[in-house]
Length: 112
Image (cartoon, rainbow, N blue to C red; front, side, top):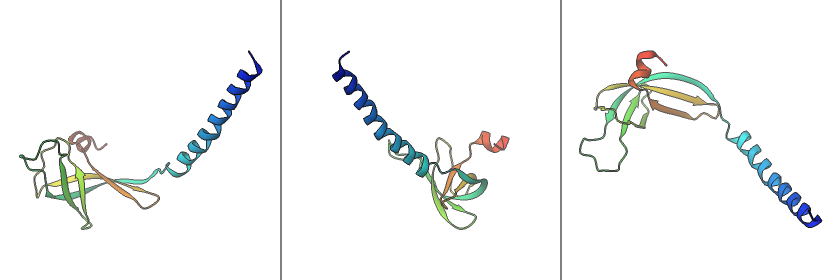
């Protein structure tokens, strides 16, 4: 193999390392936010998708938490009506962000 080919491959490898290592470090440092606390909360459904919703729209429900805050959530294929009480999983992060998701029937029954 010629000197040119050896140097060319070496320079490409070094270039890849120079680009990838900082990118990986940035992802690990800034986007690795572990949940601080996870708990189940109850909420009351205020709005639910109508049965005649337009095709291609996601079923989203508006719920009011015990604290009074209102949150929109993806409902999946669950039939939820206004006034119904649902169980949510609240996940809090170190930066103060809170995320909610509806617990499935199986998760509510098993407590997982």
